Length: 163
Length: 163
DNA sequence: TTGAAAGTGTAGCCTAGGCTACATTCCGTG
DNA sequence: CACGGAATGTAGCCTAGGCTACACTTTCAA
Ligand SMILES: [Mn+2]
Ligand SMILES: [Mn+2]
Ligand SMILES: [Mn+2]
Ligand SMILES: [Mn+2]
Image (cartoon, rainbow over all chains, first blue to last red; front, side, top):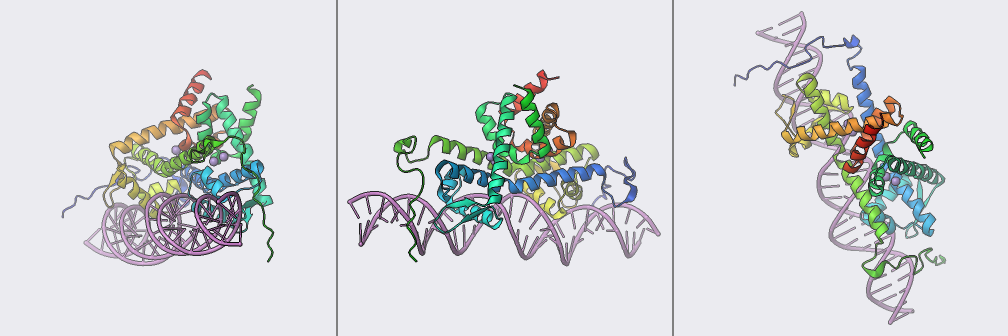
């Protein structure tokens, strides 16, 4: 086939930092990988966080949290909601008996409270810098799961000094 | 078993708004479901957006984007990277031939540019309100995928008036 | 020039989180 | 008190996005 032997481009041999032969992987690369990993891990708790927050809301509003109500509010089928509730139970966040609605364990309530506070803080910050209400609510629903404690603290300070 | 017939709690009959019998579902419920749906849809493009941005970076830095480099930067196995690249190709964002590295289509380059600008804007906003650099970088990696155009515009305005 | 190391690709497995279809249970009315 | 409709639960299917193990190709150094 006489394929022309293509030399690999870039990074010839001693490109930039010598990387000290400690097994490769420059610190900048590590840092980026760690950030992506953090994002993945935050994302993996996002759905459960939203469910716990929502269940707490329903319990506070009406005294019960039924799968169908949860499903309608989240916008998924009831079968999907029930499977997610099963994961919550598996993780010790919720309890339920057949046909009897869902309740939160102490761990679940604690998580719900943290998530609720964080949600409100994110919305308030977006509003404070001028984001329209509906966009703030919509964006916060995704953003909240990626806001670290350090960033959350800064949000709080910003909101205190502002008004 | 003599299970006491538990009456369902809450929402007795005429709770709050009459919901007009148009098939149920109060507007507030709809709005919340729509927000959750938006979040799900934003999330589903997140990984592909990050890959496209990263591939553009690698191409700019060194002229090539190889699966192993992508995998190392993202922090996943090379097999996972290759499968994601396959999705990018399926979606018309990238091209590649066996053993020859990955390139972006015009659509892929356009997406990369948008994602790059948005990423920077989110980081800059976090920095502007006082978030420490490393937290800003880490959180932005997740937040960016949930920032709407409306919110992005507000971020731009905020950054212009600030410094 | 050739062989070993590095890179690439494939196969197969797993979980999360969606869905539809169907079976079962509950509950308010007639 | 019996039904019929609503709610609940189960089964099975799908894709995304992780992983390891193994096979094949390329590249580079001896
Ligand atoms: Mn959320
Ligand atoms: Mn929320
Ligand atoms: Mn990202
Ligand atoms: Mn990014």
